[in-house]
Image (cartoon, rainbow, N blue to C red; front, top):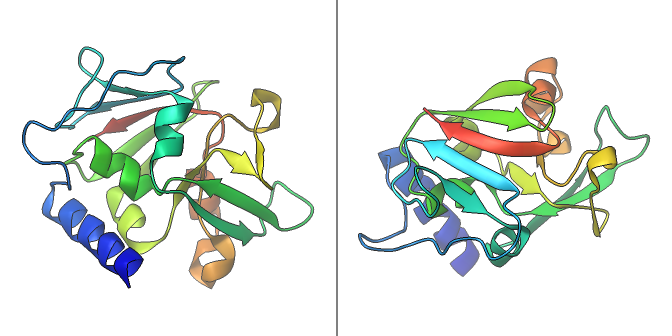
Length: 170
C-alpha cells in the first residue's frame, strides 16, 4: 500500500508540475563519473545549469523491474532501474516533454505523460547485469511492452532509447 501511495504522490506531483522535493532540497553532486545529465525546466541542479547523476545516485533511487519482450532481444528480458518519474521528481522537472539523447546523438521526444501513465524505467541492468555501452548501456529507457498492446508499436519502440546520456526537459 505504501508503494502505491508513493507512486500516486509522485504522479500527482509530476502532473501538477512539481515534485516531492521541498524548497531548499539539494541534489548532491556526483562522486563518480556523471552518466546522465538532466537540463531544461528543472528546479534542482547540482552541476552548473544541470543535474548530473552518477550510477550510485541512480542506484539510490527506488529500483523497479519488469520482464518484457522487445524487438531487440530474442527472448523476454528483465530490466531494472529507477522509474523515469522518479528521476524527473528528483530534479523537480516541470515540463511536458523529455528530450532524450543517446551517446551517438540519437534524439527522441518522450511525453512526460508517459512517465505518469506507464511504469517507464531508466534501466541500468538487463537480466540483473550492468549494461556495457556495446550492449545498449549503460542506461536504457524502456517501456513495459508486455503490459499493454498499445505499447507494442513503433511509437513506443522509438521512445525506448538506449545508451542514454541526457534528458532535456521542455
